[in-house]
Image (cartoon, rainbow, N blue to C red):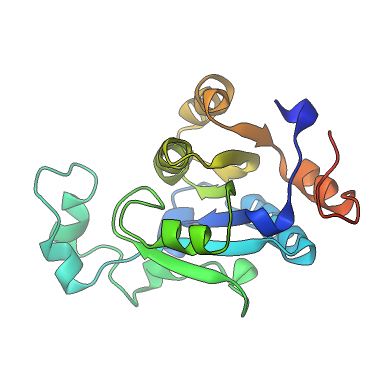
Length: 205
């Protein structure tokens, strides 16, 4: 419940996911979303929250490991989409990673599935993940499910994620995610961090 939500910065990570050209291009106008992601990142950095970028890209070996049974990624392998180093994989310039940010590269939908993200978070004592990115029906949904199953506390920034299918986006936010995650908009997230007391724990909203 967000009415009692608190955030402890050193135990929290902001995951900025798939904010790259080839995926942002699926949205009719990603500019507002990218701006909100920038603001969320700035608030997180100011509060001492670990920022982790999750991106999708493939090497030639990665393509070979994709089964033809995989309806999502078999076409990517067939057509060599999101090849490492291609323009599709470039993170939006407005939200480029800083020197203290971490970057993980995945070859499936969820942020944890083919990365060392879990190790990165556990090593830092992080037990709360704040999710933002594109798309809601893709990386956000998969990461909510997986993070919850790994016993992380999950927060979704409702207006810092988006999907080409706006109906599915709203259904997930309103009817699916609340069973495993708390929802905040980007401004409330920033306000919560700004208002936190000296011990680093945010006040109840």
